[in-house]
Image (cartoon, rainbow, N blue to C red; front, side, top):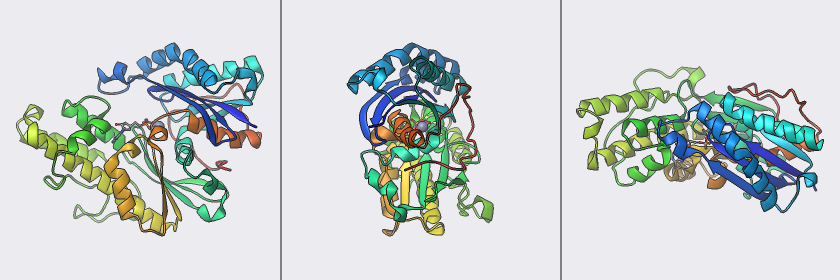
Length: 356
Ligand code: KG4
Ligand code: ZN
């Protein structure tokens, strides 16, 4: 049995997990720093790094304890080394290097983005990944840091076929909540508030969908842009005489319409891309995939010929089970990293991934 310890510190969650054979989650510990960042309405990298440093030892120890194992039982240590916030990533990377060197076990650096996709299959029909007819897999990875459509073919080639040209969808939720003084993170509170409103009340823009009267360029067919909807909300508040006037029914209708615009673009583009790439499997993952409207709408807009895999909510937001699970396949292929493993902030070339 291959037992992998995974560590995740790319943003504001310190997480550790032990996963057996790439699929059996033995423990999944997540310590959130949300309270520390909510004061600032967003994640402050230096604060994130300090908090990771405070939490990481206990989080890793708890993950081992909950899995009923000792560090000597572990086959390899895996860690997210990008993309993410560099000061935050370095805490996890250096901690993992220490474990690898001290206990003489392999070190495996994992791409956070690909891990989100892999994590969608945890406790959710993992055996599908072994079947050739599952591929190509089209994934919408939608979080606070990213919004992208990724195509993974049966040979493990991963390609970003669409990405955001500016803000991520999660960022659009977070910034809207900040503007409307609803707190941080924005996604959950906007979803809750939107339930009371009319989503058809205001027509917020759907950028890069060809609905603005301007022709959509071919290169942007599967790209996203959320800065326009955010700016539109700003002027919506200004026209109401200031954000303090957006309350009660007006607030409910505003956030319902705002959420509707974002969900509409995400689902429409994903369905179009699934058709274009003839993808039998479509995956929805990342923090924003917790959103109930997005989950339901994706089910209704996607034709039945595409099998929809929606990440379990506990694996949508940042966690280390997805890191440890994916790393098992790298371990079996002996794709180890040296102790000079570096952290990177931006999406690097995905090229090839090892999924099975
Ligand atoms: O994947 P994640 O935990 O961290 C990143 O890698 O960014 O995603 C966090 C993002 C935040 O922007 C948060 O507002 C959003 O996911 N989010 C949601 C919901 N729950 C979390 N967005 C919309 N609706 C939700 N229910
Ligand atoms: Zn994430």
